[in-house]
Image (cartoon, rainbow, N blue to C red; front, side, top):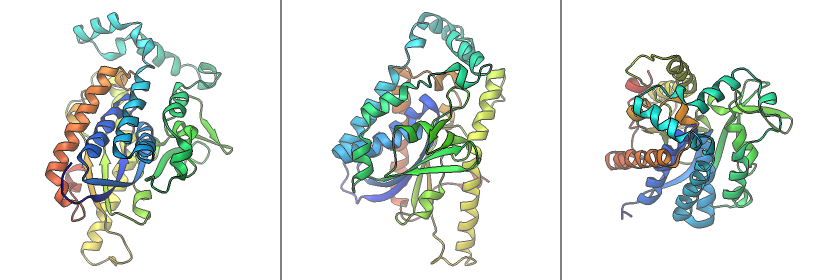
Length: 342
């Protein structure tokens, strides 16, 4: 741990199924580094899982407790990979032949079923193994009522109104996490207080505004999972659908970042009162080249080796970012708005 001063930040955590292990690595490196104190997190889907694991671990055991809880959560998730394990020899042959991931029998079967049958027929008992994992690993009671817990904002999409719903402490539960991560082709909409919710990625992946509206740090670090840029055109049908999903799930973030860039420009020009309007310092940790190499199937294939590789990539990206940008926290934005979002 460094002797440099601890700086307060907020985190915005993207989702992306098993690819969310990259964000696990980012948080793990930040916790190990010790120079940042995370006041609040806005998170979606797998990002929501990372957020509650981080916060639950912090209130039960501090930074090392948070690292342990994140590890335990993803280790439990990897145990859900049994269907793919049954076809491991086939999968190894597919990888050796460099065939598209849609040739994997489990992936192909799931894709066909989920695009043919509605969720209530495909999963009539509304079974979701993540529910038991969350209840086993996360101490929601302590998380919701500890004064030391970071503030959490979990994003979900209201099916009826088409509006973003933000669940906050102290009303978080396994159900609010599942609502934030509910992909409609695979699971029935999650009902909470008479309303039904789908994955928050459709409207906020993640939403930034909860971190802007709250009092506290002006620094927000986006932990990006979904690739913004791809240099190669998609070739297969699966590649096309995957790229459509990436663009759709990044669209809300792109819009918010453009709005933040516009407001910042007006504040700097003196056209907005800097005392009434908060000037935010925005930062970004991601690895587009790595994420652009991954396909849809790996999002639903939480094999432990893959999760650890993504964790290590997240740790390295966070290390490099901290080395280059720690001094800028509290001073200026490190995102190149024009390059990334405009």
